[in-house]
Every structure is written in C-alpha cells, then in structure tokens.
Amino acid sequence: MSDEKDARDHSIKILYQDEHYIAFDKPPGLLVVPTPKNETNTLVNIVNRHQGPQKQERLFPCHRLDRDTSGVILFAKGKRNQELMMEQFKKARVKKCYIAFVQGRLKRPAGELKSFIADQEQRKFQRHLRPKMAVTRYKVIQTGRVFSVLEVFPLTGRTNQIRIQFRDIGHPLLGERKYAFARDYELKFRRCALHALEVQFKHPIKHHPVTVVAPLCEDMKNFLAHQLN
Image (cartoon, rainbow, N blue to C red; front, top):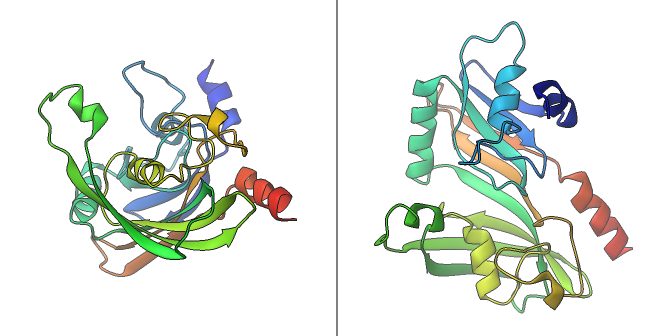
C-alpha cells in the first residue's frame, strides 16, 4: 500500500493544537507506532507526513492507544516537549476518561478495580519482570439487555489494564478477542469497544489546564442507537 493511499484512508481530525502540543482523534484500526513488523500505515507516520508546509518539528506521541481504540491521543512538537508531557503521565498527573461497552450488566453502578498486571510486551525482553498494581474506576452510564456502557477512569497506565480488569470480573469488552472468546457472548462488535473520550492535563510550559474531548466514534454511536432503540 502506498503512502498516499494510507493518508487518504485515514482522515485524522485535530482536536487541540498550540505551539507545543497537538491532539488528534485517532480512528479505530490504526496503530500509533510501528511494531517489529515495520508497518508504515501508523498514526505517527501519517501525521508527520501530512503536517503541511508550516511544520517546524517532528511530532512525537506522548502516550499510546491500542490499534482498536479510538479517541484522544496527544502528540508533542519536538522531543523535549514529549519528555515534559511523558513525565506528567509517569507521575499520574494526566486524567483520562474512556467509554467502554462491556458484556453483561454490572451489579454495582460504580466501583474501583485493583489488581496486579504484568506488562506482557516487556516480559518478552525481561523474563523476571514483576507485576505492577493497576487501578481503574468506573461508572455505569447506560445499560442494554445484555451489555453495559461505562465511563472508565484508569488511575494507572498498565498495558491493556482496562481490558484485563473487566475480563477478570466477568465483563470483558465487546469485541474482545485477546482476553476473551467472542463466541462465548451473544453480542458482537467488530473491534474492542473502547474509546478515549477525554484527556485533562496541566500544560507543561504554559501551566494552564487543558481538556481535550473526542466525540464518541461513529461505529459505537451506531451500535448504541441500534441496541437501545
């Protein structure tokens, strides 16, 4: 696939921009960074190819989203700005809110999940890596006959922690294929039903609060309209 076709296939919407940072509305099905397979069709490659004639510095991602996950993702303009923002993520100063569709109806309208999770990607290179505590809060905002719509607030940044923790309590995400078997559930979805709705942070350079919001992705909106009407 050519670079030109890659760009046409993914129209990347800008949600926020200043001289230091830029936030995009990531579509589902798109990798953020290349994997060892060296895919070229990644968000990093696309946005750096198509900044336009005014671009000054390369864009660097400040965090990651899974291939399936849609919504807010923040990039830095230049390596130093990336380092400053990643330090905020590391110190848990960035607030994130996701929308998740999960199988079944939860017994509690809100709660907090705590468990130890090992980073499977890092374990490929460090055999004795210890699991780390993962903490996620959630709130049920809608229910269907056999599924629930949640607002999810990860307080830590473990790899796939939302997907793993809801699987562990018997409510895997709709479309989950890595941590659950789709055949075990009545409702199907073409991807893992997770959307990064909102990111809040204190600007590392200007020191004012910033909130970036990505409207719910069309496939999830259409699913809700079909299931709840």
